[in-house]
Image (cartoon, rainbow, N blue to C red):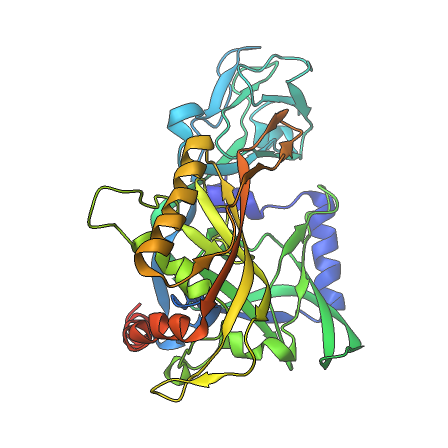
Length: 433
C-alpha cells in the first residue's frame, strides 16, 4: 500500500491522462513560490508579509503534517472498523482523506468493490442516512475533528487513510517549484483615488501542493510570475477522477506593494493608523492597582483577526472619525493634534452576558482611570444572530458600540513609546527566525 504522501499524490487513469495533457500544453511549466512570514505591527495591527531569506533553506514552525490512519484494511466481512479518532482524541486533527483504490490488486481482492464510510459512528455495509458508498478510485475528505469508520463486504479490503494533524514543529522549504499550468487575466481599474491593474490568477497543479497544506497561520507561500506577485485564497477540485487542482487568487495590486517585503533589512515599520486603534489594542494590558474589572478578551483590528481563531475574542471596527475643534495644535515634538470623535464597534464572539457586561464596565473604568478617551454615551450590549445551518444553532456573538472622543496626541504618545522596541524585536525575529 502507498504511503501517506504517495496516496495524496497518486492519480486515477483519467487524472494521469489529463496530467500528461497539462504538461504538454504548458511545456512542463514550473512556478516558483517563496516562503513569507507574517508580521503584525503591534501598535496598529497592520499586517506585513516578509520574505524568509533563501539562505535559511528551511524554517521550522508550527504547521500541519499528514499521518496514516488508524488502520489500512478492513478485518472481517461486513464489520466496521475505525479509521480516524474523534472526540478528545481528535483535538489536533484538522481533517484528512480516505481513498478506495481503483484496482482489485490495490484493494487486495479478486474483484474491486465499494468501500463504505461513516463520520458519525460505525459504518454499515450498505448506504444509510449517514453511511455513504465510496466507489473504486474515489476519495472522500474527513471533516476536521471528526471520527471516521469504514466497512466493506469483504474482509482484508485495503484502502488508504491520511490524517492531517496540527503539530508544533514542521520543516518548511523557503523556496518551492511547482509544476502545472498558469493562467491570468488583467483588468485596468480607474477609480477616484487610483488607477491600477487587477489580475486574477489560476494555477492548475498536477497534484495537490502539500507545502500549502502544511502551512501554519504565520506563514504564506507567495508566487512570482513575470511582474506578478500572487497568493491563493481558493482551491477548487472540479472533478474527482480528473485529479487536477485549481488554485485561484488575486495578484498583489500596486497600491498594496508596501505590505509585502522582499528584503527584511529594508523593513522599517511606523505607525499607520490615524484613529484610536492603538489605545484599544493596548487596553487589555491594563490591570487596575485596586480590585476592579479587567479585560480577559483579546482584541484585534477589524478584518485582521487571526485565522480561524477560537472564541472568546473581539474585533475593533472604527468609523466616522470627525474633528470637533477648528484647526490643529502643535505639541512639544511638533506633532499635530485635534480633538476628535469616533464610533467604535466592538464585535464579541464566545461571550455570555456577564463577560460582555464586564467588558463594558472595564472600558468605562479604563476611561476614568487614564482619561485617554472619553465616553459620550452609555453603550448597550446588542445580541447579533449568527446562524450555522449545518448544526442548527446560533453562535455567541454580541456587539457594543461606543461613541468616544479623544485628543490625537494621546494616541501618538501611547504608540511612540513602543515603536523602537517593536523595530528592534522585529529585526531580531526576521534575522533569526
